[in-house]
Length: 223
Image 1 (cartoon, one colour):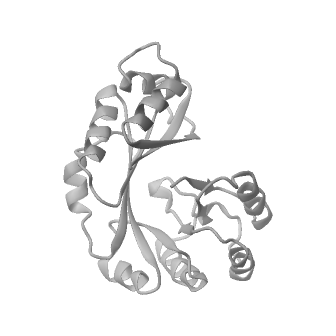
Image 2: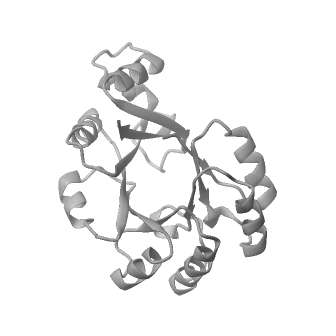
């Protein structure tokens, strides 16, 4: 499944971005990007979308844009559940009582984010086990080829319902394929042939990053 991430500042921009991404199988609405959250406007937009929609209201500490307090954010998440999204993407370490409450209203994706390094994925995965998570998403920063390989190996272990997202220099993707001169397109083909789907989204490098000037966000899904 290809998920288009919608990072618009307004409802009109959301509609425009979804039209441009009409080949996607589903949409993730990054509602933390909106300058103003209007439930009626979102409900009207939701009513005309036939594809699955994931709601995300990411806190700033996890790379999000939401500027209110954590108490306000949790209250906003509860309100947004009234729109019956297909999934709600929540940080895995939120209070278990809150996650259980949201799970009564919609399906929940538990998310882990680390924008500095790629930690022990098996350990993170074990910590994220929660009966209320329908899916688990692990997003890390790959600073070396070994990190990229560890992500691939982790997915190959067939952890059901896990999505892995990582940020790297696009040049380093070629090294996964075992050839330093292979093109990005060929590297992607190698991954697909080995039962992986790969999706790219442009992303600015963190300050003082040691990797190349062009960083991108890739999502690998074991199929």
